[in-house]
Amino acid sequence: MGLFDLTGKNAIVTGASRGIGRVIAVAFAEAGADVALVARSAEGLAETAEAIDVLGRKAFVIPADVTSYDAVADAVGQAIDQLGSLDIVVNNAGGSNFMVPFRDLRLSGWDKLIQLNLSSAVYVCHAAAGHLLERGKGSVINVASVAGVAASPTMTPYGAAKAGLISLTKSLAVEWARDGVRVNALCPGWTATELNRTLWEDPVLGPATIATTPMGRWASADEMAGPALFLAGDASSYMTGQVLVVDGGQTAGA
Image (tube, rainbow, N blue to C red; front, side, top):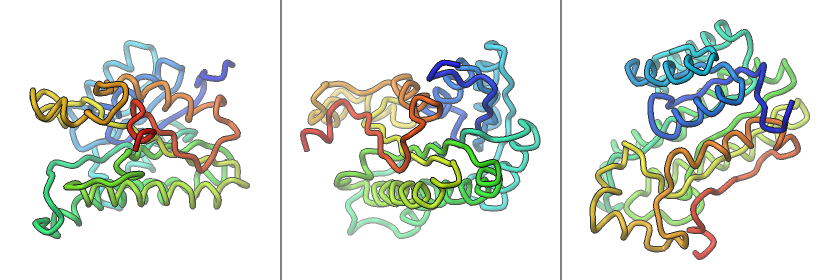
């Protein structure tokens, strides 16, 4: 097997109905893995599954609300039953649908984004922990954001949640290392997806958003496939508790 070969591996990816989650799930399938797909949108998951099916790999669609622990525990259980085991866990579900100064923030909005971007990953890791640790191997990839490593004005709840996710990553990495389970974080910079289309398509706000990015452009979701594949397999076998930033140089110049 090559360093980036996932033949015989089984993965679960949350937020797999679109964007970065879909790209990661399909990249894993291209590398030989079978994948359990989790998100709220059954229609979006079906489209991801179709892209995997044509590659000759197995894709299992598991619609679930990742902000509910019961739903997550059931989804992880289904994934293990259908795949037989889990080797790779990707916590990708997340996002933010508003930007507002902190003093104007409704606390219900804070709670919602913490639940979606941090608690969801906690639920998945907690539900999968016994299985991974008993098997004595596995790679967990928490998709955080540059918002979690730098100031995030007008996006305070999102940035705080992603910073918490990075802290969770490091703590679990240390706890689980001797049991053979690796935990790392992938931190994309500004990435053009359907979720933020109104921002990157805006002729004024789009360029302004990436004005401090040295590479001078938005990332495409496809550009997160390689880093995720690296973290998933043997290429990163001695790497745990790390934060892999993929941001076009944005944080390097901060």
